[in-house]
Amino acid sequence: MATDLPLTENYRQILYQQLPLLDLRAPAEFNRGAFSCSVNLPLMTDDERAAVGTCYKQQGQQAAITLGHQLVQAETKTVRVQAWHDFARANPQGMLYCARGGLRSQIAQQWLAEARVDYPRVKGGFKALRQAAISVITEAANQPILLLAGPTGSGKTRLLQQLPAVDLEALANHRGSAFGRKLAAQPPQIRFENDLASALLQVQAGHPPYLLLEDESLLIGQRSIPHDFYQAMQHSPIVLLDEPLSSRIEVILQDYIVDLLDEAITLHAEQGFNQFSSMLQQAMARIRKRLGGLLYSRLDDMLLQALAEQRRSGDISLHRSWIALLLTDYYDPMYHYQLQKRDARVLMRGSASELAQWWQQLAR
Image 1 (cartoon, rainbow, N blue to C red):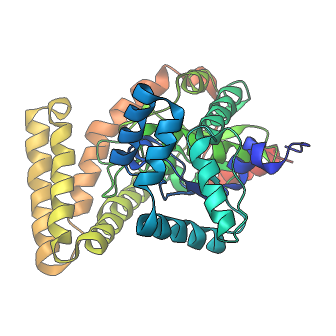
Image 2: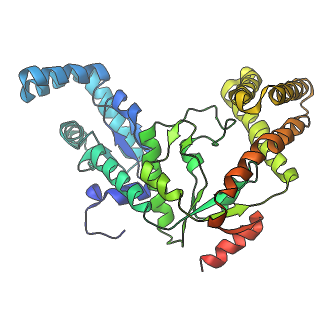
Image 3: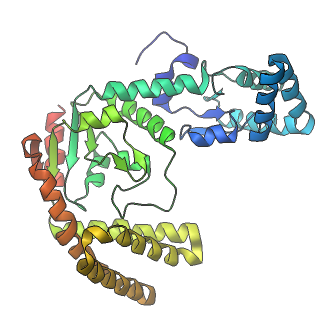
């Protein structure tokens, strides 16, 4: 990634390092998509920006600039400049940007300079960084990719975290199944893609023999894997993680019962258990048609009994029964059906320790 470009226009280096970014765009622009390392401290609010934009169309640039200065002056200006000043002091290695690296970021940079803070500006702004991110993903689609597959609960994410891999589910903040929703919202699609580009650059820096990913559907919750990248995944070789049912039940129990409840209590305090219980019941209801009436009714009853006992005594052991039935009668048949169609692409199968050892030998 070595280059003679200054860092302010070395977009891949900015993405790779995930440098702190002061985003000067209006909140509506930021909310449509940004970077996980960015903080929105806008030059103008949404209403102020809309007013300036209307003025620009009707009266031209100079009138719009004049209006902008009228809207952001006195105490309003002081408060906003102070926020930028605090960010710059806390993040001396960071940069600022606006949509295209134009007037808004130039004004902010000037006002900071008047406050004796010299802070670099990303040339080309968010648009340039976004284009670089798209290019990184497109190029990655042409590199060797290896997919980690395995039945539900086999611990694929745990294994990926031990290896130089890109965790798509972590980037999407979703575990990828009907039960995969988390309490915190998924990032906007644009942010998901931007952060994917950063993750790809970080993994590629180690020059692994393959770009290792979990075998995913096109949609991870409501986030979509970029088209070219997903198409490349559909033709890539596969390694299979095989773990016994008993181990898989414990993985599900930890992820979807213990950890989810902890998250719910952290976010919702006394209402945490209700939120947790509601999420599990909603997840079961989402696959009701695919389960069929009899199996759904049985699973739902088992889930309700397990939740009632957990609420009463804190005992989570009853959850193992419905988890086991859901795996054996719903998820496993689907997994084996899909695997039969891709058997020719399988390079290796084994336990987590066997696959980790295989990867280490491959990467030498």
